[in-house]
Image (cartoon, rainbow, N blue to C red):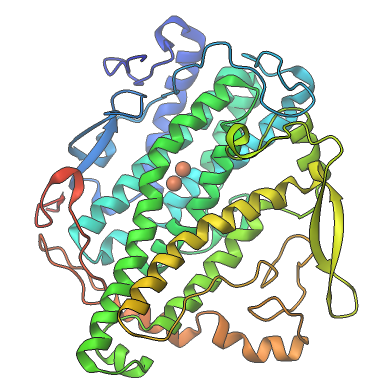
Amino acid sequence: MSAIDYFEKIPNNVDLANDRTLQRALEHWQPRFLEWWREMGPNDFASAEVYLRTAVGVDAQGWAHYGTVKMPEYRWGIFLADPIADRAIGFGDSFGQPVWQQVPGEFRSQFRRLIVTQGDTEPASVEQQHRLGHTCPSLYDLRNLFQINVEEGRHLWAMVYILHAYFGRDGREEAEELLARHSGDVDKPRILGTFNEPIEDWLSFFCFCYFTDRDGKFQLKSLAESSFDPLARTCRFMLTEEAHHMFVGETGLGRIVRRTLEVMKEIGRDDPEAIRRQGAVDLPLLQRYLNFWFSSSLDLFGSEVSSNAATTFANGIKGRPDETTQYQDHVCADSTFEIEVPDGKGGVMKDTSPMRNAMNEVLRDAYIRDCEIGLKRWNMQIKRAGYNFELKLPSNRFRRAIGAWANIPTDLEGHPVSREEHDRRMPGWLPSASDRDYVKSLMQRVAEPGKMAAWIAPPDRGINNLSLDYEYVRLD
Ligand SMILES: [Fe+2]
Ligand SMILES: [Fe+2]
């Protein structure tokens, strides 16, 4: 395992000290990053002492160190997973050849676009979440929010390292731009739609971690297959950190469900008004939040049929998640994939696409299967509590803004409906203004160690074997 050097100005395991030019470029970028963090990050909590984990190694076992840190003093650095000896290209036209340690000139712009798009999402999420600390449901949750924030900051570092180290001047300019665009900014928004959506309450935050961060996981998994080895290694280590973000989303939503079920049991009723009078989140309201974040996140995968997707696969730039273990055919030169498209007459029809062109859809399908795991678990909880209610993912045709179904009105099951019906029923499908107001009214800060807001159950256990009433964040 390669050790991380914390004596350096920029902690790293890439031997930065022996590459003076790169080191200087990154040291030049570092104060800008810190300035961005101070302005756009959780800036009202700069002096809070937070119980955070920091990477100390890059192997799966024991990679992290836990300790109390003020966020601006967090040691953001550059950590790549260790190289795999004799790693060969795992997919596409160059299948079986040795992986690349440099970016081939002919693929440079494709790589750059992918890296910039990935890099853009990392600071975007920090910006989206920057006021949430004021309304945390517990110190445990506050700590998790901050852990995610510092790690998304580190993911930005991960992408900036690749840009600086392998893309010369273009890369340095892109790295500047990553700090210049801002989530929701009218003039310079973030690149992808979902990353411009405001996250103003914790229900949205947990949905974001569950659905949108999970898109991130799938993008990272497919970049971890890349033939450009430094990118693959960077993404592999990012995935180690990402697992916690998935955990926060899944357990956050699960704890909301658990609390709601407790309230339903206490009052012996399941109508939303009665549940809201007890200050909990009724399940239909939760369903509408799921509908919103799931449908928004589906667009992040792009169009069902895409020549771009075909080229990045053919060229060995971006593979499929778990390429080696999940698939037999790694070349996909003449296989096909069946997709469902609008038939132009208000219905659905099947269409066949060359497999390579359908890679976005292959990824989206895998993502949807992964999203279903949590819902199954929550539905078990609901069923065990004796209620006849099922949380569902809407159809992947519902409320799409990108691809074959863009702007085609459908109901939650994906059946095309008239525009009139669509608009009329929408308040039952997505959070309404009054839903949002209600959720907002729940957002009162609980900051006493061990205490939880009334709308969420406590977690099963604390962080790193500490008790639940540990003071995970010391506010002053
Ligand atoms: Fe990330
Ligand atoms: Fe994440």
